[in-house]
Image (cartoon, rainbow, N blue to C red; front, side, top):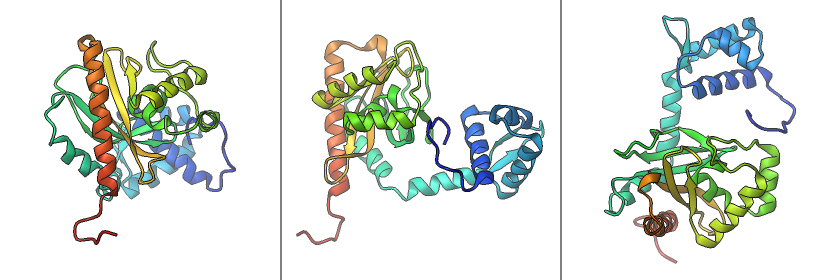
Length: 266
């Protein structure tokens, strides 16, 4: 929805407005006043009042004593149900525990959702990276190591078509400025097998990522990344990080196609 340049005819306008309210509150990361919601979404206060009342009654939004609104616990329940139904996050954590290399660094598993990546598993570092990763966190795919790893599994034509439907975001002065520059990066990622976020998400952070591929090996269902302080990076460490994350992603990909315990091999 938000950020798309082309939209199909809206068949459920009230539902769309309600979802936009949820998206807005989620992006703010704090309680939001009804007047601010109405202003930012260009909606009548009477309409916002009715929608918020419905969302509060259903448990998707909570109204605080201050009068502001925040996401309700029902959202958390839905998110947990979605994650519990996916085996990949559990495999990510289990595989990570088997490795000693880069154990102190932040690690992330993300999936593509619109123009953003959404973190479905993460481990934070004790280092001050300028960001604290959390489940459900969203960041622009074009700026992140996981996002660029996922985009690299598309063809150039597919990437151009993708960004004809979505906006490209810039988070820092190092963020990729346009589609042509992004395509150059994606070509390098396909050759190297791993992606790099060199201060594009946060000024002080450097990350390496790689795609977790589907069973046919052609597409990526997710991507993994590890993050470091940029000031700690050397050419040798960057090479080691890229090699590690490529191998980690490959093992995670293999775990998704391996026969389940008790199943018969062909």
